[in-house]
Image (cartoon, rainbow, N blue to C red; front, side, top):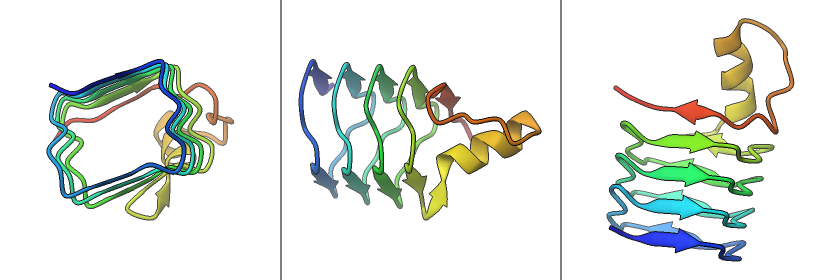
Length: 103
């Protein structure tokens, strides 16, 4: 299992790798790209994920808590918009950053 803690990794690209059950804690990863990878069971906590893109990734049972999600997208969809829809309103969720996925 990969672990990233207290790391500064802006603009990092993860492509065609398996990061199943990876742990990202207190990481700055703004403007990053995750593409064509497995992130099932991954945990992101206290992460700066501004403008990070997730394209064609498996997020089954992954979770994101206490993260900055402003501008973050999954397959081209703004996560903050998805969270606002899920909460039933237009609440600003860019800093609340609690997201869990399961299929």
